[in-house]
Image 1 (tube, rainbow, N blue to C red):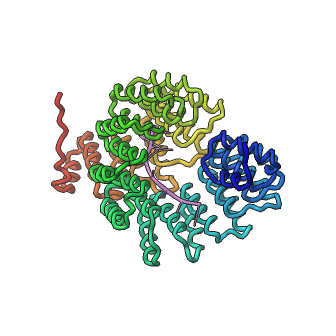
Image 2: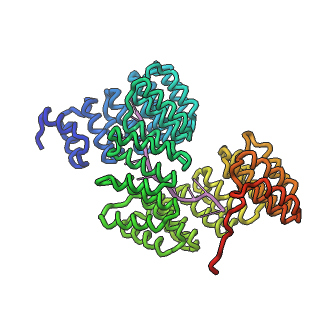
Image 3: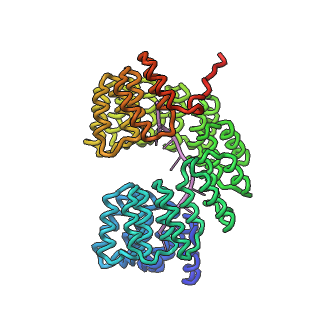
Length: 549
DNA sequence: GTAGGGTTAG
């Protein structure tokens, strides 16, 4: 092996050298006493990190006496990219105490890591450090902060950071527009988009992906089409990120024909775009097309990743035909990717939804590494099959092995209790969720607890709970209460609840129909007539269901 | 420094 400094520097600037080559270069710089030079050490650390050899990178870092800010940043980034948040953070804190202060790149890296690991408190702490060290208006720190806050659903904080910037650059605009879009405030995102254009800033692919990500329901289809038009005009549609964003935008709008048109206009759609199309068909309930495209992709000899397999398994679970699911399981085994946690969770879910809970549990037991999602899937499966006590045992087991439950775990547990009518156990779980695990209740948790209370003879308690919510209850929660009133035959309360629902959503006739049925059940035919008279011909004219059997 | 597809939500 012979290098001179010129060759060495050229070699080190290549970003994808193999592990073997990296080791050779490392050996050379050690032999030439260059390893203590932070310039060479930084490059080798980066190469080890790309080759997933964090241990080697750390060893070199520890042995380098003069650590430049670049060297610190590359080791922190290596840990952050490997999702080793604690290590990245601890290095950042150590660095802050040395003479080599963190720069804007260090902060942006650790800010991103806080958001990816859902650490709101640490994010606020790092933001504080950004402010006191004079980086409060730095575009690199601020765009990272805007993205991090919006990814953690703290759009107000993101907005505050953005608001302090006098002349935002394109990246900053993109970050805030995407933030509003992903938090569900599509209209705010669009307003900012117009403001940006009025200021003469030209959008790029990131901008349109941000705006398109906010288009989340069929009523926004025309806006979505406008965005698509803009992409065609600006030639963004050949950008892979833009194309997949458009495919999934049309899928969310229940417009699979347009989604397919975008997809078919691409010469070589990538895996993400295939996945967007397949998921679109799957979520539209067209699992046949989902399977067809999966098979077409397979014929091309492309290797699927875990997200795509999870999506296709969701489609086969919907079909409730075990045959397709088994086919995919076979593919997973042949590829040797059955240990992937996302895939296993989807397999468990698929088997339990197709009625083969025992096969799902078998998948669960053979897994070497289980995470919270795997437990969530198995708890759902047990709940779905009425085995609430087994679901609760699983919950205790996951706590014993040190896993941390999340909001889905509690959805699954409450669902299991609801399904089995376990009133007091369900109440206990609901309480522990907030008191012991500090997880905020979401609509679905309220829906389950309301159903549980209402269906087990505590309708009044359920009503009082809904009335005492910190924010006004949405239609899902009131709807759960209405179905309990129906089941218990409580017409008085049903009237109050239905009134709320009709006020909230006057367009929806289903609540009027439900109330009318409750009146009918009680023999109050005059009230049925009065209510039906308030409905238009179209609202009453729904075709009754017809069975072939 | 910013972007795309996501398993559990019966």
